[in-house]
Image 1 (tube, one colour):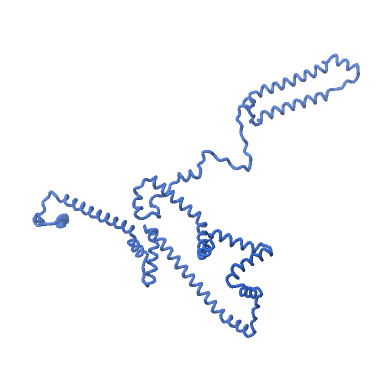
Image 2 (spheres, rainbow, N blue to C red; image 1 turned 60 degrees about the vertical axis):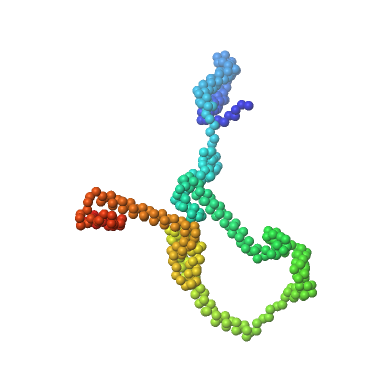
Length: 396
């Protein structure tokens, strides 16, 4: 199968076609404009002198062929170059751009993204977060990446989880009815919606049969046929409400007029109270956010702090966020262990620094005898006495 020609038309091809067309048109015009013979005698003379019509057409054909050969000769190189040119696809307007194979995919971009790994994830336990600094950087990046992915999935499914929780809370009070009938929440919801759909869209016979079934199952079966039928008949017949007498209507109107100012005052008071509560909540929220940005274990003891603050408010005692935070931290066993280890490490560091200072002070005064009035008796002083003695010498 020959290869498909995918080359496009070039300007040289258009020029060649134009020249050939112009030459053919010129030749036809020359033939049309040839003079006709006036007399037979002259025609014979002209025929003797000029070449025959066949020779003239052959000459024109030869001249035309020569011009075509000349054009082909001059444009042969151009044709060869055009045949060697690769196919160039012309982009059409309003077409979507083509994707590059080497363009990074979204997953690859997420793989190359760098995260802030200065702090351990807030969901970790305090005792586990103490080992965060010892992890390699690539491990930290992977951990933070997975934490971000989990948070993103939780945000995406938040609405679905809220809906499921709301449905579960709505069904919870009626679980014993569903279990008594041997069903499950899904089948119960389906039955209720199918019954509602039948009542709304069914014909007269279907609705009547459904109402009769409900009446027999939940009415007559529980209350008895005669009693329930009479009650149902009174409910269907209905009793028109009695109209108020003019005296009662006048009293109601006067009562409403007198209560209108009181209702307006109550609404204004409620609006003002709501505004004050909103302002207090905003101030408390701002203070809590500022405090949480500096508290290391805030997420771990948030609930405990809330309980301590509520308990203090019930007792009429004032408690600051810092006090509630400190109490909650020391009441948490894991956080208390972490804080105790940190205090022990700080104390050991302070003792080490004090010892190093004492050694440096002893070395600085070694090798020169103190004056007689400042020299302490040998073997009678402690380290504290030696330090005080060295300081006194330096001050002198």
